[in-house]
Image (cartoon, rainbow over all chains, first blue to last red; front, side, top):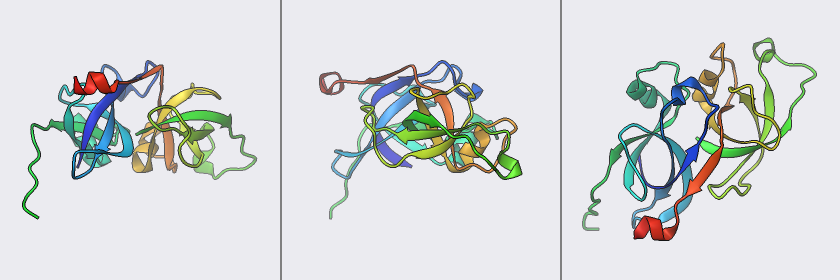
Length: 91
Length: 96
């Protein structure tokens, strides 16, 4: 799983049936300091995440299919948690 | 899943049997601003409705194989949906 920040969304009307009624979010990946790394991904929303929130994204297909309860869902990235805070340990 | 733009249609002269019913498109991956990012890919079109100029989002690996019907054809990149609109929230919206 990765930490990312929701920075946008993608609107689509023609898509695989598993996407029907789901929000597709644009998320930028975060580094240790909470800064954008430059990488992004499109993730399906499973919990109601929104603009500017830091989230946990599961970026693995088998887990995503398990969450969607659909063994044939062609989805790899799915938002599985909204993050309140990240505490870095002493280093 | 990432954004891409269809830049061409691939017309194969010969294909392995498993791919014979699969529409193939040439796709330029995009960054979230819609600018080209990385090398073009040949994607199977799971929607069967994409064409040159269309912005799409695509998925790689096993998920790509699941996009198509019948599923589990041997592809490594596939189009999952056509993009109508991408919204990138402004820094003011994100931090304000």
